[in-house]
Length: 317
Image: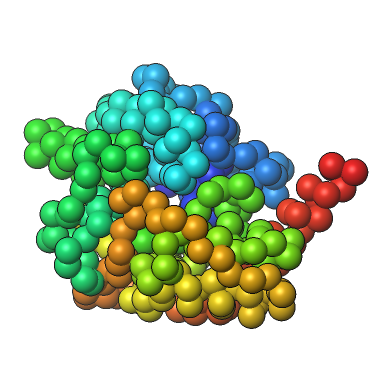
């Protein structure tokens, strides 16, 4: 098999590259490195089955030779990115997805759309099944990401219906683990970094909003199972273990043996109050269940960030 992974130098994309190589695939990574990093692929620098293309998928994509799978994982994905790169976020999710679908069509490849729980917006239903259409503010601060992903899903189904393209859609819920960016702006790297540096952990609002934190290795296993399946409707991938942000903050303080206090700042606009997937489809169709607990995943993630912070302090010195 030969697979293309757009966004393959990013957090989840690079872990998918590892899995595909382990399964015997040749892999072509396409990434413009706006939020991805070659550090995430450094351990593969002598891997002859890996090819890297620095390219922005908002421009037409050309890949020589056979392609069996196109995994579309390219997009800035943190609140910081939504503020800093709003147009690039929308172009990646819209024009970029269109170009990735065009590549899959030209190569007669299977196409996977990496989508997100953000398509549900601030949900009025919990847990969120794939049949729920969502409650999204189309002009709010998160809209550039939410609507780009919703549009990407619609494009994926349009190519399937109009061209008979073999497609699937994965919706990720709050995935975390090594290779997240230190200054990502999302809650996991924020809290871990603050705790390791002895800074106050900052909660926006009262901390009662919930998230379901899934470890990257579980999510990538779900991705691979979905790619091998014949299922075409969206599939939620995440854990049903729901935690409040305040509970998560306390778990990080405990896991890092930190003395950091927890402080509260004004709530963020359109911050979802609940995030919990209904994973019935993944369980029944893919035989998939998450295996790694939050506490287990935090230990690996904290160890990764300790090294990153140590290297950063050496560089600053």
